Length: 288
Image 1 (cartoon, rainbow, N blue to C red):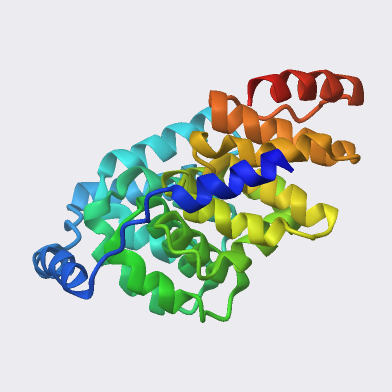
Image 2: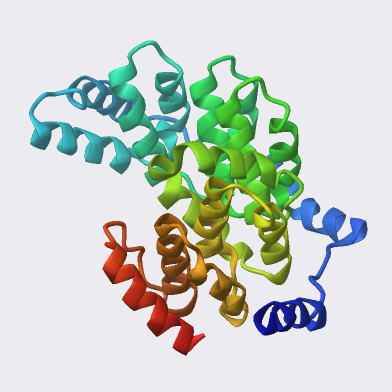
């Protein structure tokens, strides 16, 4: 009871989260608008175009060294390859999808965001998934409008990437979408989720997750604790303490992992025995 009272006190007395006024949003968008008008993809020289064609043939090689060399050569061409990689990403040859995405990851920077937003009009879901995830990883307020529109996309993964990107910007209005995806397929998306969400650590994030964990089933509590790794500030680590007393081993383990991440910045312990969890719970109760 004392822990709960202290948690509520912390949440109540914390400084309010800063908000952005419509005027400030408009001011922020002006430089982006001017930049979008000036920015264009570099043109491929005949030599670069030839290297691109060769690279796309070799990047599918069964020889890993040759495939890696081909991918490196594509990346070396620079941003000029981006439009072609987008077509490859939306193409029928699925063996090229992952290499194309890696090349795009390597050559694209925040300044290219206005140039990839139009790709959201493409019919191929793979391209729209890439764009929304890339924008989410850029952590740009100017991308918020695009991400909000993407919440209405027909593709569930596009919706998830959009909701994730918005949460990474501190907008938790679509957190339920993120929560649902993390509940069902955590292992495949854990690294990406952490990368996008970590900058949004805040009191507000803790409150939003706590709502979804209160009186919830075990899996919802586990999901909430996993997201706490990325969203809970160190000053609020005490809100995780009560979960160390859970009867279920899975919840104890995730509470320990959340505390490891929040307090010490350590990675999770995935293979944690019941005995190890009991011992670690004792240590964490003494620390928090």
